[in-house]
Image 1 (cartoon, helix red, strand yellow):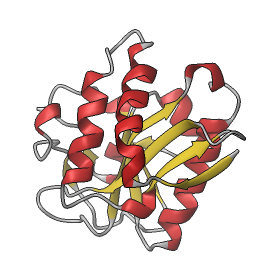
Image 2: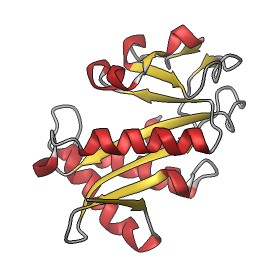
Image 3: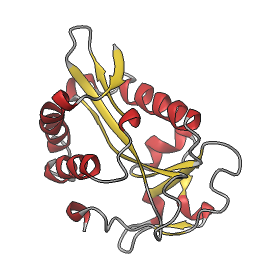
Image 4: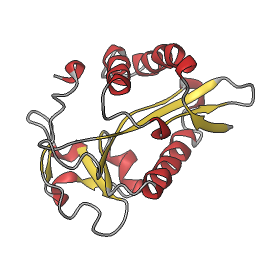
Length: 176
């Protein structure tokens, strides 16, 4: 298994990969996640060093995730990251690949000096990495989202101390 930054020549493959991974879930057909990946890459919050793939021993992409800068109320974009989406090939799920990706991404984000990460997802999965309800950091879930599903983690003590406000995904057409 090898982890590396995504390359432009990977983009088309990753688009289909992400859609196919999410198509296999109960809650989405994968089209939204595919669109979000494209919008993040095309926007000003994209961080190439934090958009990574995992390859198997044959060089086939079996995992992908992105951490992108994320503003709240037009502020904090250099302090806060959004984790979305995290994709692992169905046949490789529950083998520690998602865990390895997140742990590596967290280390890279710390090294780059970011204060924290937010994610919307399953608390049972993300809590084990140190994520907790974002409202404990005064970061409020978007309207219509249950607060238990928006989580945040500090990358160092006090990393989110002055970050506050309500999350909005309005910069991404596919999420509004």
